[in-house]
Length: 378
Image (cartoon, rainbow, N blue to C red; front, side, top):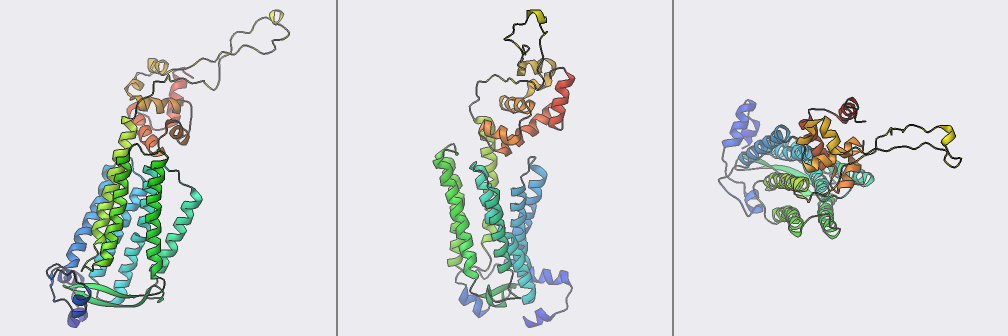
């Protein structure tokens, strides 16, 4: 094994050797890892999970039309975690393994925060900017502590490299601040559960089944993490768990978004608006104006959806929900105000807006106002 570490083989040959070389398990690894598969090379598993997480990231960017920054960051974080595991398993020195470990933590530390933000969005909980900023700051501090091995002993007292089935594995002796990471994780898990329960109590979720499904996904992550702490494997099982989590969260998000966009009861409303520049009727002669009546009579005509359709037929292709959003846009209401009026998230309004622009062959709200003025509606 020492000869292998000191070999001057080309990089490509070294990777191939790590992928397919099956070596006996060291006595230390065998005694420290009760659940060991003598025939599985961890590097092969990490190569697979890294490829899958990268494909999922590219797939989300290419196939999901209405992209959310939280999901892009979530998928990127999962890819970083798996890429770090893969690099660590192919390390030949402790310094290489520590650098790979930092890459893994860069993804892993921010995963709970991203999961919390997605759950808050699904549960229609408004995000306080100050609190989110504080959470980001805490995540950065935890990452800096977790990335300190090699420079400090506060997180790992000692680290050394062992090889299991031909793959490198970083063995650690935990330092005094390592428990902070456990507290950090449990804190986020508690916040997620609290958000779900709060959303259910406040009736922000449509059904108990929905609340239960989201809660189950969260508890599964806690369970997988707990099991990995109790039973040692040759590979980090969280690399597989994270991929399943991002798929579950995307599934929940899409299903709920579609449900709220199309399945909610459609209110029987009349789409009206008051134009910003009302027309003024013909003023009466001064001799006919009473002393008590000092202001002209102002007519405030209402513009309905039917009025717009009569001069802009393409508008008729909008669904009932899209028409409701469209009429709010005609009134120049902000996305946040529209979301509050319709009791949905801003992301749902963003999705409707995209569909409206596509169906009406326009690219911005300004074009709606310009088109209506051009058609003498406003």
